[in-house]
Amino acid sequence: MTDAATTSLIASSVLIGVAILALKTGLGCGFASLRRREVVYLATVYLVISITMGYLIGVIPLDLTQNILAAGVTMHLVIAAGLIYFGIRTKRQWLSKKRDLSRNTFLWLSIPCPVCLTATFLACTVLAGAIDRSNITIGLIVGLVFFAGIIISSFTVSFLATRSGSKDPSALGTTMILFGLFYMLSPLIIPAYMQAQTVPIPDIPVDIGETLLSFALMAALGVIGFVGARRRRDENPEN
Image (cartoon, rainbow, N blue to C red; front, side, top):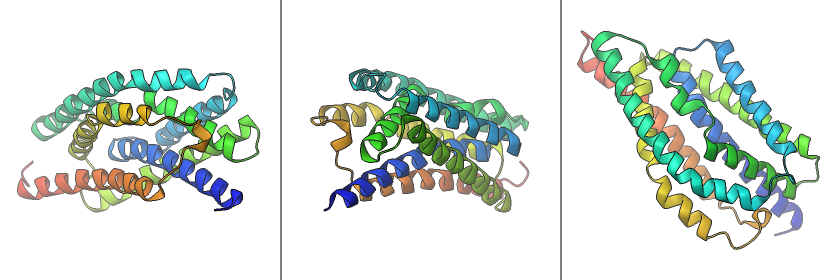
């Protein structure tokens, strides 16, 4: 494989990985009772964060980011517990009392967590090693992918859920529970990843198939969320 092809592969893989993170955020926004401008505000926050991370390339040692990533396992467990608890609470309050908690509970799915912030920084670092651009430009590229990914996924999920009659807090709750269970796998995945780090980050080989599989899994979690809510709605029309 030529150097140009390798560079393109690394850059594409990094941006696909960023799009996966954006999809997670977009799912939370799409199922929650948010106005479009509020989704844009949140996407802008990710854009600013990415530009900041790009600026910090070369300032923050990579060893520190790996330590944060390792410590983030505990944080992932906390987030997983929060997603499951508040996912159940969101569903229960809506189904039993028609009380909408989604404007608050969606934050467990959509706000940047420490591991996601570290992953954003690593994405900027890898991309900076693959293409010859300024650090600010690298951050801007990553941020724009985040921004576009959040907007597109959020509006698409909202449209499809509305058309299918499944846009309600119950669907958000189901999605949160599924992601919470998925996050429970992080104590197994992240340590294995850390032990596999034997070369500098820009030289890490990337498996496009596995990356696309992760993207498909994220999408499947969202689909299961509103399909499950719609089935429950059909089975209990009085609710």
